[in-house]
Length: 368
Image (cartoon, one colour):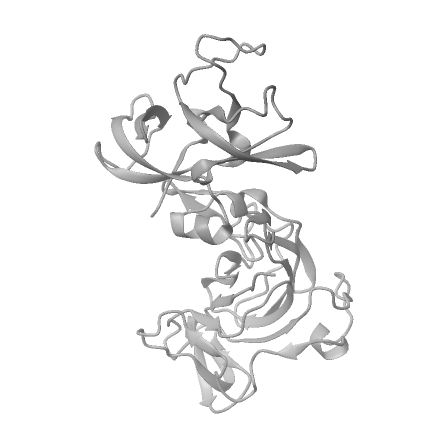
């Protein structure tokens, strides 16, 4: 089982405990008195009650101002955007520095499936988050009192990813459960780590099974887009995605919202990639379920499905290595790591040489 990295970038103070995902689930949206780690078995603290042993800054070279404090002070009139330490001393309560801004904090221990309980306090206008695996973010944001519709940027949301300079995916909270700035709040998160087979290939995405914000249900299930549309090639690798390809930009047409790319020896149309220039080499990503594939027959021989047996626009030749049955689908694995997921095995599935089609709208530029 892969490990889960718990990663924090909080603007506030918090206490934290962790427990197995299969632990007792009494936090069902109804009040049960004390916090779950006080009334359920199996919990253990990730803060030792005196210092930051077991935690480190995400960048070891950067200054780390996190501190343990006896209390946290918030002033509604005199300083609503600040949280101030009161009596720094060894405790189980930590604050993100005297000025409310410091390096992100990461656990040294790693986890698989996990249930996490967090208590935190925000100043007015705060914006931060809690990451599991260092990738999957539950948004922490001062959403108290807003009358606008909830988005993935609000407190309790699963934060969207930035692709081509705009946010995609994510999941808004079901309700606005945010409390006033200066009041303690809580998250209880049930997280299922991604699944991998014996060879290390990912076979199932990570999932937020459930998120409670101040005891109210704000998330249930996995927001698919936020987990299947990586923002960079590095994140794609961490998530187990294979369809990351190197491409050269041959043309850009903002008026028609199109780009022209070269991937290997094949030219393809794609959406307009703002911020890039002709000649740039970029990384592009496609989801396996967005691609189409069929066997390549002998030259000049047509398929019964009327599919072309030679590559056409937005198509490449690929060598099939393996067909993996999935529930209600199959995964086609090609040389070089390219994968395609479709509902059925095409005709002539024993053929080695195939044609894979990339719909233009399925090609996304991602960071390196």
